[in-house]
Length: 283
Image 1 (cartoon, rainbow, N blue to C red):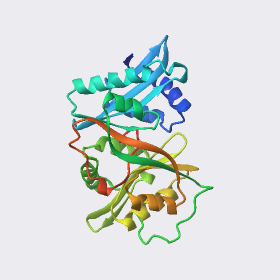
Image 2 (spheres, helix red, strand yellow):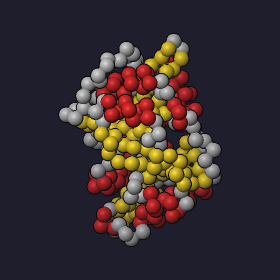
Image 3 (cartoon, rainbow, N blue to C red):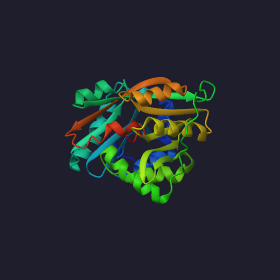
């Protein structure tokens, strides 16, 4: 095992393609730019056979993601070794809480290491062929996110997420401004959304609002603005408003995820305002 460098990104991309995940080269660069000493690979005879990435948010908590192992090397303990190396790095950095979004396959491994469940998440997908137009036209029309509006949204997001992730959301806004939107009532923010272009689908998140009308307008706006055949959303299972809106828009349940944590979870955020997470790779 060694620290991952940008020269290893093609190897990481190969593994994520095998897994059928949606991340891009730009996503790998985000991890390496944010945590240049905190991403690791299993390098076997010059080939990348496993990866893990970390991202620290305001020293309040950190994220572990991209735990990938070449199918030919599974069952040999590489996933556990990579995960423990990432945990060791974060604990040495005195990060009080480590979080991740576990797949059903990975959850037993994380539980053995000591991770606890925080809440459940569901991935929902929609294709243009399967989807349908909203039964009722939204009265609201989410506006584009201006530079001034972005600052207010980032302040709200910090409260909802539990830590500042402005660098990540600014990058998403710059790369896909057409997929960012907000609903305002004068100076009051009713809801907001960001999204990013994945390798095979546009991914909505974070999607934030506890106001059904605003949440619906944001979701339908995202569907209209995306020109991809497939779109993804990772929604909080407990948020019946959000799951109901997804069902009405023709989304289909794809798979479960479990948000888990290791350590002292003192920054859980404001879940009542959150419809969908950014994604399992970023939280």
